[in-house]
Image (cartoon, rainbow, N blue to C red; front, side, top):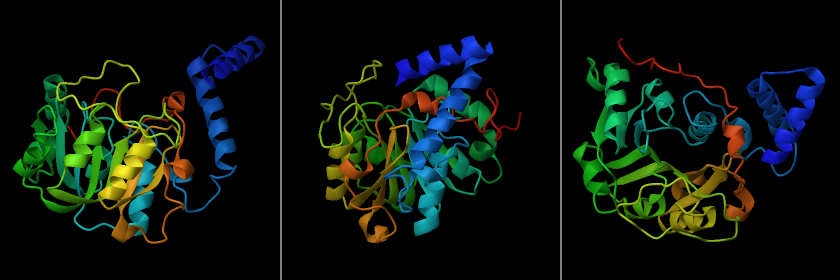
Length: 286
């Protein structure tokens, strides 16, 4: 696909003398997205892909999250998310702006310092709604880290994106009962193939594709934990799960990786228009 896009981009540029390739790439991906959503199986009204849009998420997760909670409702509007980097592009930033509260865990000290600078209102304001923990996550410490924030039992959302041990950490979490779970999957592997990265507590992503777990592996684990796979986003990055007691007939069936898998269309994610400023967070007092 990337070679195809590059070739067509160059041809159009030669004809129209277009120099702004970023704008051209965006228009091409938008057309591709429109055409894709008008085809099977995406026309199924219970599928989630067409509801995707970006406000502060990496791709179109904000819109999908919104649609999921439209269908199942919210309870306490509490989230736990880890692997947020500097916080400006994650799955719960937009929720913070919609009166949610919760916990961010991030291993990078530099990223946490940026969060402290940019999110002063929600961290230290009169009514703080965000707790930040600077800690590298392992299977051995994840439950303790969550408990230390005061968050336990049922919450509305858990989001996991640590580029490696995601499967293993998800498996270990038992101090909370999220109603919705988001986990990044490795779209390199086809929908019917179960693959899991070997657990390594000191793992740091080396930019290779030998990380995380396939969608099938996550589907099977989630089922063991009482969750149903309900969809993935078009760019093939995140998988969405709902607790089985809430899913009912609200989402597309069958609830399998084979039915709900999207391949890795990572270049598509680069074309989603950002809803936040490039340098300053809207929740800063500066």
